[in-house]
Image (spheres, rainbow, N blue to C red):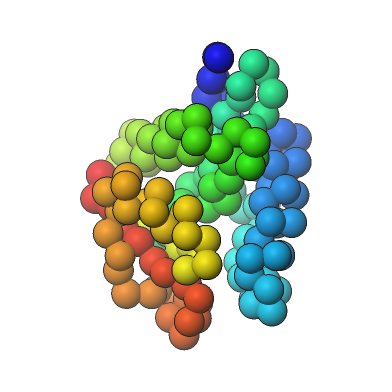
Length: 150
């Protein structure tokens, strides 16, 4: 199995199509709160995007954007359900962290939903530490925020 990691931006058709899959998944897991979260997931602001390919088929993605002068926020992390458990999310996240470091950032922060148990477990496994909910997520009961020093 050949996994290829590509740096691109939010104009990538493969990224756009993967995000459509992600949004369909989140609409189910977030339920009534989907509209609230969705307003913060505009992809046109994402200039640093990673797409993972297995045998030239796009199967996973993620992105980073500046959060503050020392941190980036990890956004739109997703792997197609049939390709989970193959290390694709980890490859994607490692590439995003590497890119953030190259750009001079010291930390990655992110938000995920408590109902996304696999995601919560994944970020813990990747040495992300739970932090106080930030910004728009402060009052959200379903949100869990993480930070990792690079």
